[in-house]
Image (cartoon, rainbow over all chains, first blue to last red):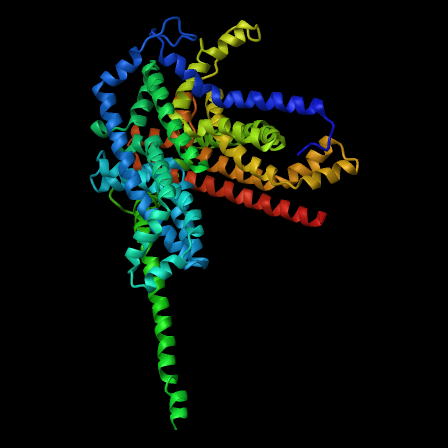
Amino acid sequence: MLDAFDARGFRAGLWIYAGAVLAFLILPTLIVIPISFSASDLLEFPPREFSLRWYQTFFGSATWMAALRTSLILGVLTAALAVPSALLACVAMDRIGGRSAKALGGYVLAPSVIPGILLAIGLFFVLAKLRLIGTLGGILVGHVVLAIPVAVIVLRPAVARFDWGQVTAARSLGAGWARALVQILLPQMSFTLMTAALMAFLTSLDEAVISIFVSSGQNSTLPKLMFLSLRDQIDPTIAAISTLWSVLVIGIVLIVNARRTA
Amino acid sequence: MTGTAAMTAPATPDRDTRAGLRRDARRERAFFLSLSLPALLLVGLCAMLPIFWILRQSVMTLRGEFTLANWEKLLSSALTWKSVWTTVELSGATLVLCMALGIPLALALASAPPKIANRLLILVMLPLWTSILVRTYGWLVLLRRDGLVNQALTGTGIASEPLALVYNFTGTLIGMVHFMLPLFVLPVYAAMRDIDGNAIRAAASMGASLPRTLATVVLPLSAGGIRSGAMIVFIYTLGFFITPAVLGGGQVSPVAIRIEKVMSTFQDWGQASALGVLLLILVAMAAAMLAAARRLIGRKGKTHA
């Protein structure tokens, strides 16, 4: 882009600066890995001795395991609810077109621009009224509403690219709408649907603010428990969880990327 | 006879057909609209209703009567204004730092060969894929009194004693900039990558220096991306909760933290709701300001042309 200028000095400076910024971006994620393998109670860096004791603490703790279970169940349920509703909404927007489609799009994307704390307390008030605080269903609807915009963003371009002539053909041959959509649209979108499901799953897994306000007791999610223990003390168990977490998420992202480029 | 019959006979069915087609089109539209119902209901009940509830509760007593007491209490409290100021300060400082760190990074990425740029973009996206709690923990480890950063600072003699980098405004700001930077860089990079190389070559061939080209060609042409990035920064940071709660260590109280405190310590839902509305107003004001900036830049662009 800047080839037209012979400014080697400027470019060298720019890259040194950019390198420092990149280091700033990745450092906090990388630092937790060695600490998670430390044998010491202290957060020493570099660790003098290595062990797996923090991983044992995590997997041996009933509280952490219950939170992990809650988070995984919530993630799966969130994807199972958010992706179908998002797909149907995308089909609706694509087929209707025009101003109504635009309005519909703005409406379903709205939760992504509402500050999380507002959704959290608003949902808390509504759930308190319904006496549903601390229930799995209460957190679930909060996560679904955050995952719908994510799924819509992933699915919408794919629905727009889809060749609707095929559905028309199936319809003219006597297939009903439901059958045409299930047998023609779904198979062709399987990869995008998978991506949307993983993104919805990750949205739920990563969500903390709604969980902090709405979940309680045995339905506490992993991020909520991490948040509470970060506030109280910072022992390396969190480093072990963080490492596992990053490996899981980066693994998912790499799989999605590899499949997309393949 | 047969000829006229053949010519007139289809006329009636044709009108019917057309009416039928219109009816079918209406039905089809209604059918497609109905497909959006699950999403409409979910968003309506779980996002719109809660926000509406906050608005309503901000002007209600516990027994459900209309009152302005929540607002009077809120607006007369110095703590409210302090938290509003902290919020604006944090968001503004985050935006300034994102620009200072992000624009050069985006420029470097945009000027690199696409293959290298794509590799480096993975590093930019890495934090996005990591949980906010993981990153916050990472910063706690790095910024503590005997953490890596302080070790480096005292070890190299830059600081004579460990600095207070966390459990205060500085730590919160570092965590927030780290959270927002990838989200800011991506639209700016996209805008810079789309700049027509000929525009830059033209500037160079007409004798513009590199700094001048950056200031008068590159930056104006990436203004759209910078504005999107700024919008994203404001939307997220004005309501930020996790980072100030952990890295602020109780010393930093933006509106989001104040809401939680009013909820958990005083159980005052009316007051918390009014604070929530205040936060919504802040977000709306930020959006309006950016829209105004856009019009201003747009007009300036036109006079140049």
